[in-house]
Amino acid sequence: VLALDLVLPMLQRTQQQCDTGDRLQLLCADAQALPLHDNSMDLIVSSLTVQWCRDVGKMFSEMHRVLRPGGRILLSTLGPQTLQELRAAWSQVDAKHLANSFVTRAGLMNAANAAGLRGDATTDMKMRHYQSLHALAQELKGLGANAVASQTQPTAVSPAAFKAASTAFARGREANGIPVSWEIFYLQLHKPE
Image (cartoon, rainbow, N blue to C red; front, side):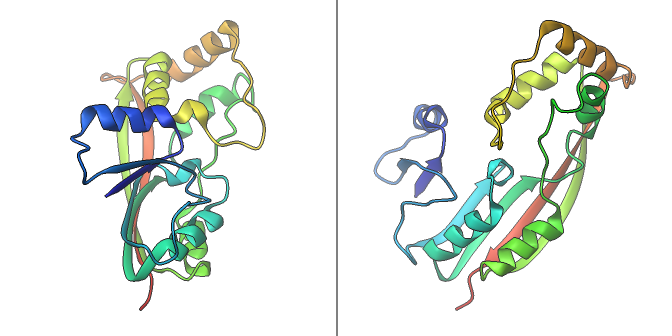
């Protein structure tokens, strides 16, 4: 079993929390440039990683290259409706601030098929509630979203801008908190024999 992540601290956390023994190897690498031999993997599992890749076509091509014929890919990623409430709040403060965008399900499947992979995808919509923008920001930071792949360098958020976004975000408050949408795609792919 090979655990791969672009961020070394995430691998270190895996090592701390798991019995890494001889069965688990850790590799710090980019999913868009896998340092693995062709046809060397039987199964690829990815959870909430794909959405941070700049070029999903390149990522799927790399997965196809390293996957053995008949091998499988199971992955989950976020869809465009994810965090729509957060984007709406920030748009009232700074339309350019939250430029993160997620690939559509059709876009993902087109990229996978173009890379030679076959399979299908399902969608699940979740609604989670947060007590504040700060609480949501902390969760996103824990997911690695503070290091989102972007074409431009992220800019620092001023305290005044964050406060204004927090106020706009809080306008959506319901009895159990502020609702935030999470659109999750589950892809089950394979490399034909």
